Length: 380
Image (cartoon, rainbow, N blue to C red):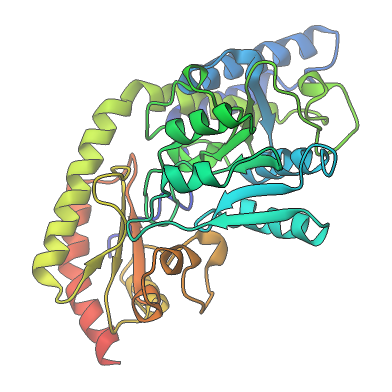
């Protein structure tokens, strides 16, 4: 039985370039970057080389890149740093109803501390209206945080426009940009974006490594204390092998970005056309126009999404019913509900996300299996 992986939004296979770079560092450059001797110097050189590779993909200066353990830490750092300015400089945080739990759960915690949290709605396509966003901002807002690309639907928010609106209002702007990295050309330095969060394992790097981008001149309070690393912005001995793997994955993603986007977009369209023709009553969720090329979210009314995931897994095919962090949940996707999709369609949706390793013959095999699986699950 062939094994087909269509869950790249949850995590990606580590790119060979990243594996090779990590093996080199683990074997040869094991030093602590903070040490003054030759071993520390070698590790420090590797760290800064990786910082340059990551900053190149982001389109920013290297000293604006802060290495963290992942986007969850980066998101929490920004939100909690903004909350430290309460109540003197404001009492509200503005975000969106379709955000990742790494933002929503952190916001809920801040709400319990007395900080107001305004969740802005999205339209049926999953997009946030810039006019509504503008109306929500005033001098009482500590931070606005809007995800760039939704992890469940692939819908792209107009982040450059939203960041410009926030800048006009004098409101710091942050974006959870995990699913945008390596999928969209970012050029962050040209945008009035203050902060952005990223994870290595979403584009072929290792797990446990991420980045917080902080625009030049932007200050924030570290989430933890304990050392001078990362210019005192993120204490703790750096995960040099993981960071080097992240850098190598960024360099590889930058080199094939255009080719990969075109290829995966064509495969995704081919997949949807096959579903539309072979599976009755299938519904595509999210904007068709404003979407990254590698993500497809489809509802199959009458077929429970978790049952579909399990049945496809038995066929050797990996897909998702929503965010990986919500796997096993029987609740409808909060993202789809926020888009106005009724529960009976939200609980029968699966996400297929493509990546570097996805091939056309895998899509063909998947489509030879999917209609029968949907029919069985609906019958059950």
